[in-house]
Image (tube, rainbow, N blue to C red):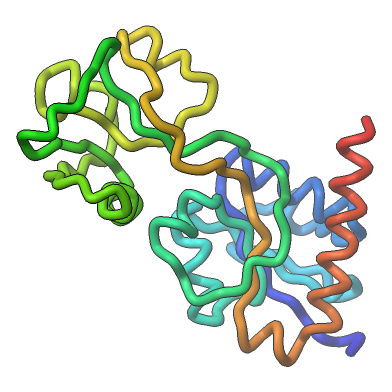
Length: 215
């Protein structure tokens, strides 16, 4: 339907700026968003789209609960919280990996419980449960690399991009759990009732991604 509006939750920050650029190239530019003022939502009625910025870790919640039809969230968030949504497309932005890191020359002593510091407790628990390792989770919100340096933990489970921070702190990747990138996600009910419009947006983004890769 021409007058159908698709609500899109964009992650705040550099990733969100890059995601919006893809939407814009796909034909869903929104001048309101480029000149935001104090507005919280930004609409292009002609294109049938409305954007709003949210904290990256909240995107999946907005989509799962139906406040947004579409959103873009990192695979790290989707794996940690496992929201009840559809994952439609790998946007290819924000590439990094989830990994176990430890001090150089670390050797796991299976005779005792392994202490794991992380911002992703569910991800860590699932991984170590899959290999039958008994662990003690230490939930932290920042400076994860500091935990093994000060003896708070034996290892960490965290996002690794270049690995430079690990190297500077005499840490190294012990095990890579999975690769991370931004994903286009959809509310299940929205996809059922707005499938045509959502698939149109998905196709436009796919074309924009291919064009970006050729540059």
